Amino acid sequence: MTRSASLVLCLLLASTSSLAAEPAPDEGRSWHRLVGILQYLQADYPAAVESRSAFELAEQTSFANEAVETARDLGPTGSAFVARVQAIQERVSHGQDAEGVSRDCAALVEDLVMAGGLARSPRHPPDLKQGAALYQANCAACHGADGRAQVAIAETMEPRAASFHDAERMDGITPYKAFNTTSFGVPGTAMPAYPTLSEDERWSMAFFLFTLRQPPCEGAPPSISLERLANSTDTQLARQYGEKNVACLRRHMPDADEERSLLTARHGVGEALRLGAAGDSAAAKTALLDAYLNGLEPVEPKLRARDPQLISRLEAAFLQARISAEKGSPKLQEDGRELLSLLDQARNSSGDTASMLSVVWLTLLILLREGFEATIIVTALLAALKKMGAMEQVRVVHIGWVSALFVGALAYVLGRHLLAGAQREWLEGLTALVAVGMLMYAALWLNARANVSSFMGELRQRMQGALGRGSTTGLFIIAFTSVLRESFETAIFLQGLAVDSATGVAWGSLLGVVVILLLVFAVSRMGYRLPMKTLFSVSTVVLMATAVILLGKGLHAMQEVGVVPLAPIRFITVDMLGLYPDMMSLLPQLLLALAPVLWVWSRRRPRGERVESAPESGATRAPPLQ
Image (tube, rainbow, N blue to C red):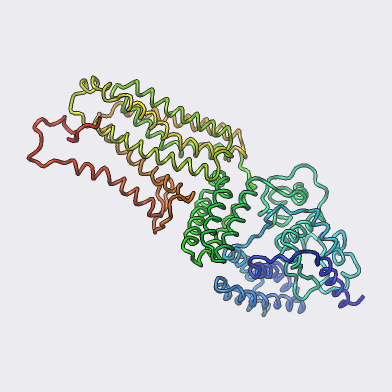
């Protein structure tokens, strides 16, 4: 059979076998095409330069020329990449700088994926049985039923049809590269495109190719994400997970909860981009909110424990995309593509599991971080009450924070499914806002105690009257709400870490509790030795500062569920201090922080009206608040 006849046969087989499939237009087709061409140049150009084959160098030059044309088709968003592609084309056309071209192609691929928001992995776990059937119908004629390309027609092709058992060939291929090949074909060769196959079908066929040279799977595969599996060669998998696990990794597709959740988020963002392009800004905003609450939020604790910087970037990107959607801005497309890329970064590590030691360390850090605010509040109250001899109220405070811990432990046992998505944000936001009110009450109450003008003996005699039933209830609520928010959030974080190592969470929790108890003891002992005026003043400042922090966190949580509008400004983000670059949270925080100063200023009296009987030295003259 002649070479031309062979090519015609392959093309006919490819076209007739896919007629039954429904056309499925791809998002970012030109972007994917350019990435595919650059990946070919990255892998094959160095070998072509080394061989000095005129045919191979001409083939690489044609790829580089096509890359330039495709880059020009990207539109305004991709215009910045044209010059970089042209620089690659210039060197390829002269057969120069093989190592530099390969390196620049790899870097450009990463930048294109980020700018275009490209998905480099399937939206759903590939169906290998479907992939096998598609391979036999579309590929076996040229590559052989077993993938060895030992068929007569392969001998007539230039270049020869690839063998999927060739270790050197497969070492430069990933399922994503195979997906691009089936999507666009290889110009100048017998490899056709399969545009009439659906995206899922092409992914299934691409993943199936990698099973052809693998032995039967023995045992269960390690945990891995689809994103990593789609962008790793067999050699890379063997290096990271062991040679014996490669067969199982290629033959069993991951389908973890975290992966599905992030795919839900990605689908929602894609839908938002479609709606935004159609001019439906309100629906685009709703789709982004649903993508965040139903996709990212359920897995946010585990992602934050693994990579807090990435989760912060994701949250900021979601907020920015929502702002663009609210304004109906064309920038939504750019913001959405960046968001898609960040989600894929999260997916790339979604199959990772941490060691027990690292889980212990993360658990300890989480307990200290989440418990610090609550510990300071509770110990400040305990120190003040014990100094005043109000032991009945000390027990009330203890009952309050212990009750909050019990509720948090219950949340941990029941699982994060009851406290995920919008429910969790609502709970954290409302609890924070309630805590703000109670902390302000506590601060004013302590300020009143600091201004009592009698001696300590008289103060103790009046304590029963000053701390009536209302104050007792208030102290319980303060202790309870101050710890409740942190308790719930800690429970959700630990649920995520327990997936990796429940034992590590147990040991980390034990260490964290010990450290927190030592902190409570230290602060309480220090409180016994402080003068009353100093103790109350410091406690008041601590409570007001904590109220300002919780106000920012509560309003931010309400923004994330779409209740409070967004008004971004240029500012820093300090999550621990509740500072976010948004006027809707910063302005109320500023007003709350200034309120005590304005209150003290308003209570000042003119010199001539001062009362002769001054209070005890060092105290301010504001009347006590009963």
